Length: 112
Length: 114
Image (cartoon, rainbow over all chains, first blue to last red; front, top):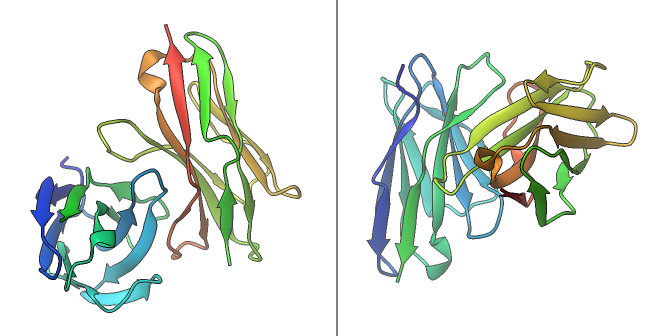
């Protein structure tokens, strides 16, 4: 049973560029959430997708957007990158009726 | 708004000994869930243990157990017979209801000495 997978593992971008991160949920899971984890901090909730719609959103600007596909996989897009966007981006999945989220290994984004 | 406070940035324990990690939280909801997640250097966030607020009995998972004090809004994690593989960052996490998102504390870095 494959767990949550994310790609790429690492990414380096420059300020002003755009980036897309990808997530495949654990088999059978239909709800995907994205978190940003700055160095030395706990993860912060960005948004959650269910049935291809954004259901909840944390305190992040509109530069952060996402998408969920019919196969439940998801993308996180960040436009106009800032130095402060450098972080580990974590994807988590669960069943819609479940109460435990399972995390992927994350994508390390560095903005220069 | 929910908040989670972990007052111990770092802890150390001798192999085979017992250690307790502290956590306090604040929420106005009556229906919520509490979790401890572990994040080793590999970065993979792993669920250690979970507790439903409506359950009075403390959760236990093998060497891991919690002391859930609902009135005091305290949720500590006890690790018994510590092993080298327990070394990691431990996060205390709260979620309101079954659909809410996760709110993380700042974490406690646990070192295990051989």
